[in-house]
Image (cartoon, rainbow, N blue to C red; front, top):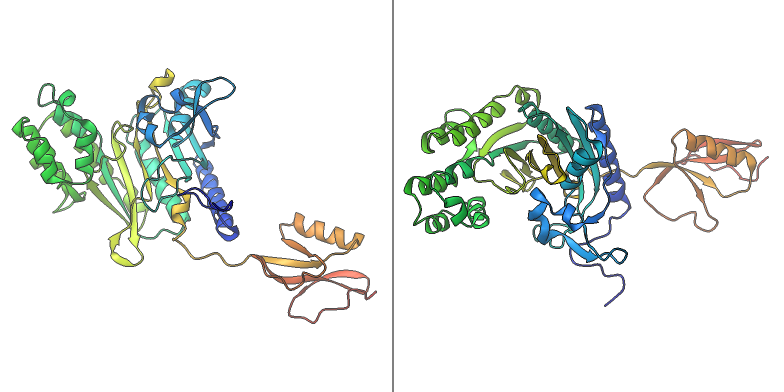
Length: 409
């Protein structure tokens, strides 16, 4: 096998894309800082017990694991940064009150999320700890929307869901939560597999089974004449857990946030229970219009929600809400970056030239010193100006002006 081949699902990032990735990463982290979020940088590897504890246990199949040659213990390469950030909040910072944290870094998946996904996503996200009210979800959703706007994402749709509805319905039948395969049930709901749901629930309590099957059809606009929340209130049993969840969804859907942000549709999908191991309350996913088909929506670009139990394994369960996105998945949005303007300078051991180059670089300019014999080579940077020597001094001139004799003066 050629040495230059990479593992399946892993790829290099070439100069122009790498520059755009870094610019987006910086812009997002700067924006989070303007909201009061502090940057943390968890390690790439940890003991598996820490990475997969509590809400992170669903990540086991996606986590690359090896034996640490120093300790003999099993360590893993992180597949998601949320458990790590929860550990930092619960165990290292140990603060009272609200803590806002953000992060950006690579994660590694043993298996790709889908056929087109990278196994080495660049994950960016923000998390708010210490506040149990829906204000936390609203702030996190605003950050998520603004993050996608920085990447050039246009019209969006946010689908709201709630992790509390299925457990509340399962409580209608004694022992149902233990007897049913929860992973299979949630998978059928996510796929909206109505025949599969009916078959799985054939011998269960009829009212509970009918309600769970109904979830597969409860998706669409949140409010209004065809609003899903009102429809869910009419179709689902009037039990406390269901009513409380729908009340939270209505509050979020009616928030003034949606008047402040343009081109964002608010929808509800009560069967979208992806990541249900994590979430303890509201969850949400953001979609964008497909460039090839304006009537269609692309797969989720960002996900988030409430996960109050994520820090319990580290000795401190705190209210928590957050979101994350995969930065590379945003390459298709926004214009392709133009070549970066730069200044060309000759390669010469001249103190005046060196001083001029240093001053330009200190002012934020890109200055390329052209090595002898490589004057006509192309690269990412578009040199539009050039340092030329004239009358004993170095001058910055447009490249379309006739070049002076470098030996003049």
